[in-house]
Amino acid sequence: MITGVGADLCAVSRMKRAVENDYFVRKIFVAEEIEYAMAQGEPARHFAAAFAAREAFAKATGLGMFGVGLSSVWVRRTDKGPKLMTDGEASKKLKSHGADRCWLSLTHEGDFALAFVVLESAG
Image 1: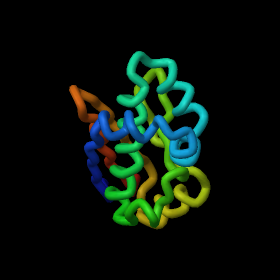
Image 2: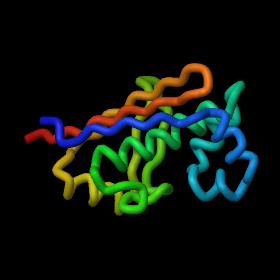
Image 3: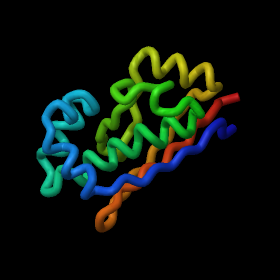
Image 4: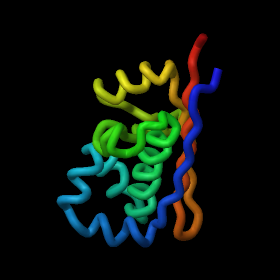
């Protein structure tokens, strides 16, 4: 059963300016996201998608960004596609929302990156 849905759109141009600030990058993104984005031809595009994933997760849970925390959720790139990861606190909040699984889809086109999150309960 679906327990939550969230989507977010992030402007790549806005993120390009934001990631010029190393403090911002290190405060928001985890090491594996930074390494992945910096290895790509247009890092801001991938930072924007990862940021949008956090926002989409916050919307899907109904907790908002301050209820979840920017560094409590991150994107892991796998051979099967992107996966949304959560730290202990965010995992507890996810379970209290009644969700057992989290699905993530990312895309980018032109100046925009989009993330779509679906929360699912096994019961």
